[in-house]
Structures are given as structure tokens and as C-alpha cells.
Image 1 (tube, rainbow, N blue to C red):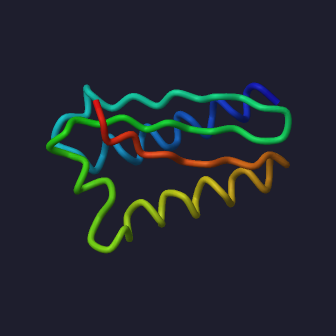
Image 2: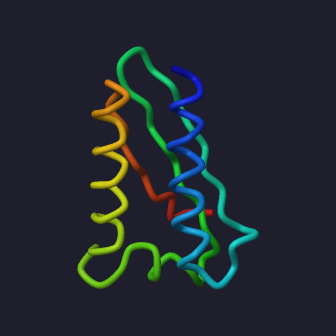
Length: 85
């Protein structure tokens, strides 16, 4: 199970790094629970708008991908975008 969690964290990291101007500042932390995992995404202050997108469309798309991947792994994933850095 740990390999699948690592794969999803890396997937989110790769998607976000492709979207932002400062990919070296992208950090994805995971908080593991029994049946769920919270992925905390931190990016540069200048990139927060690009990650969220207009009306939240980019953030929603990333969350859908994470949700679909979590269903296959039988784990619930929650993506949180940390804005205060």
C-alpha cells in the first residue's frame, strides 16, 4: 500500500510542477490515516493562482485525478492547497 501512496504524491507533484513558474518550490506532504490520506500542496506565492485556476478549475481537475487514483488503491485522498506560507 505504501508504494501506491508514494505514486499518487509523485503524480500530484509532477502535475503541479508542469503548471508553475517556480517548480523547485513545489512541496507535497502527506498525512496518512487508516482509510484516508491528506495531500498538502505548497507552492510559491506567485504560483497559487495558476494551481487553483479560474473559478478553481485546475484545483478541481487535480482533485478528480487524485480521487480516481485513490479509488483504485481503495484509499480516500484529499488534496489541500496551503496558501499561507
